[in-house]
Image 1 (cartoon, one colour):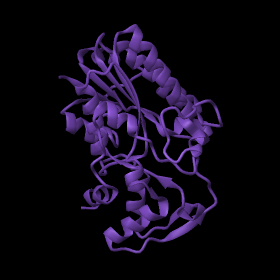
Image 2: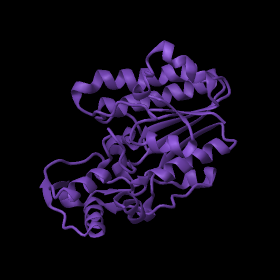
Image 3: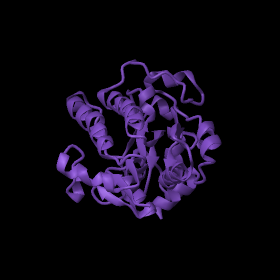
Length: 279
């Protein structure tokens, strides 16, 4: 099976491309998802894992987010071969503050507008394009609403918040934690994300929508994550308070649907994932 990773030279794409022995479609391989000429090669592939996105949440980035994340996704989908597989990397952030209603957030959590930034809204619009083109082009499609995914560092890429914590502790730089570090997250190691993509590709499911994270079993507060990294690195983290309040305050994915339909389970614990990164 020929697999293409859009954003395949990015932070997560670098790992997934190696995992699947896939080809890269990214600006570093001189391909632009908004370029009609470049996009013609997409039809050569049996499966496309769409990671390419603009992740800046600042108000100044709104136009770029809508162009890349919404219009860019539609442009990719128009070139996917009929009957092929399309996996879309969405985000937990589409739920916004609605997620705070749940101890474990299900896929039925509302996504109606509650102050989401252009990044979150553009990713949600991208999901609607996935649903439309699934019918129009007879595609097998999967949407993963991802918890923060962390991975080994790669050249030229910014890490997730877990990787950022590791970097700051290694350099003895302060880490600012909101609400005394009490917000909870369930960061997912990149290998488990790749395994979920493989599980969908190998399944017979026509359309899947899944919250994908490490789940409640591997969830931890921000302070617990920082302290775990410090212990594994043999360093004392420099923790400072932050006045910022994350949205949502707490987020742990309900992964029951992915477990039931994909026979998938995260197998890399937070401690093991951090160990793999720090070496």
